[in-house]
Image (cartoon, rainbow, N blue to C red; front, side, top):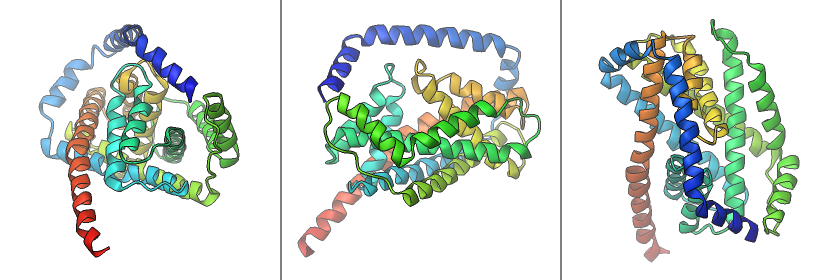
Length: 324
């Protein structure tokens, strides 16, 4: 893994330069976005001032449910590769990597997951990184499917679905075991990793695809509640579309590497899609609340969920030890 270490060392030495470049690009993006949305800012501010806090709290709860379920998929991938990770450790690793997205540089998200997994006893960094790529790829494909399925039932969506469909089709091919395993193995060998990656059964892949599609619907419920909290009245039938909208935002966040955690591009893409079910002010207010909810829930699940569940898990293990 010497080359991987060299990359990490180079990134660490030039972190100020990389951070400066990211900040310049991000500032340019926000200036352009602010200029384009200058007429909607007053309306959005009014909607935020009068936001329903109960519905906002329910939206945060639904978003928390999404995260609590989402990490089970990663555990399933690791289990398929005969790696056992407890739920508290998996949740903690997920939340640490989510929050690491806010650090400029891009490399800190996988690095945080690798370090958290190592502290939990999983020391194979290549397998952890590969599992992250599979998790992201399968989840993205599921999100594209959810969006495309819901799109015909929503009017006034000002977006051509074909670029997203092509992107999803390419990812669907890349996550296939017969493609992912040799491709990832080739890349890892260049980085100094000599072991063969484990296989992933087709039925496991299919099950994960259905599972992640369900998580996006849960994310759609969270976004539906956030929209209602700022005065919008989307139909219940739009929840699947909103789940696809959340998936598009997450995909954009990954592609725009210059923006920490996709801050800005994620909101812009979601705003454009939300205009199909809400006014410009309501859509802008909802994406602002969505960012606030994302960060708050990630911090809460890390500090409360991960630590409390981990402590409880250790107490149960200690209680079972004498009987064993």
